[in-house]
Length: 138
Image 1 (cartoon, rainbow, N blue to C red):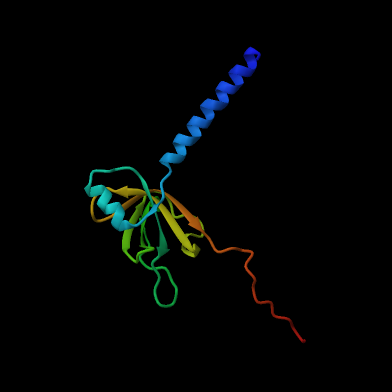
Image 2: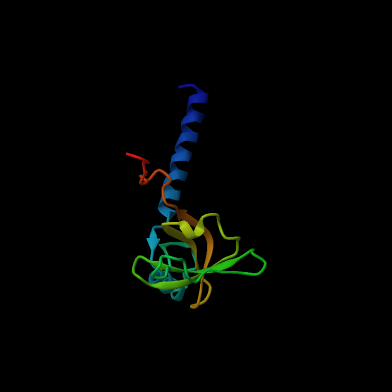
């Protein structure tokens, strides 16, 4: 084998090792209950919590409080176990945030009162969903 081939194989092997170790570090979705337990056990790593924004009976988002400077905000998130939690995000409100079907917050508890999100991922309603089309005069 040529020296160039051996170097290429070595680079590929190193890339495979890096990919495998990063997959092992990938976080799965947790609940707020699990996140609190992790904090109490001294684990401060960022975790992923998935849930829906808290809404009232008419479907309007409740608990969204944007700071006066509009650079940060808090909101209420209900995880898949039904646990409500206030979440703080130190960035402006993302576009279409209140229209999202589900929200993934990546972060951790700094205290027992509030979950601090470092990143927010949203699943918005599909613009390709079928809509009712009304035809005139048929």
